[in-house]
Length: 254
Picture 1 (tube, rainbow, N blue to C red):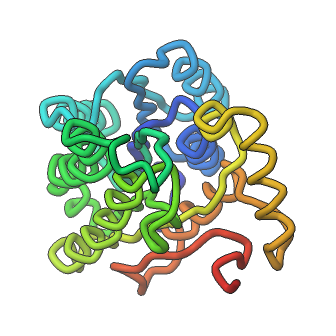
Picture 2: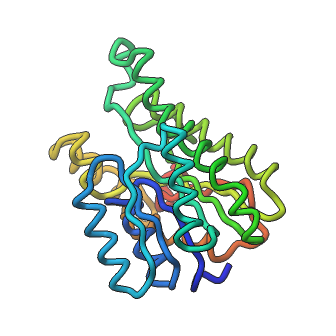
């Protein structure tokens, strides 16, 4: 796909992987919708950085668990940019609970996490489907996690939701082709505030170093390295759909 002049929605793009992806898309000439749920100031800063690169930018508040917000986002992108070529489902949430603490999660936790991590991407894909098909070479990239492959991560509910997202990617790829490719990236440990705030400084640093020591490439993901793989699925891999790729520096080999 040629990204110059294309248009993209990146959910959860006020920080981290979403922000890095939005910036990379803008650097390549794509118009971008910056989406956020709560962090308006951070989203506006990302939007300003993208606008400075000479592309059109929309900064839209919306919870992807709300179908109305998803439809409004897709409609706004088409109305403002005249087209929609790319959807990056990056918005996500979790609750940090040790897997051994089965009483640490309840039904509402599961519903909330699934609402954002699984239902949200489904609703966004549904809302954007017609415009992505009209593009003729549309791309959807879902941001899952190594948690969805290995059953690890911040909580059992989170791991289960990310596994469901991988499965849903395959289902969507079957029905959205041939006009739209649908793929998933599955990052491991990602440096940044999201994990640090959830884990606390001490556990964050200990886990980060443990993973580096065990990983063939001796490094962990950054928002930018994950964004590079997302852009790879968007701008290349024209024959690939329904796949997931693990981004963990080779840790999965151990």
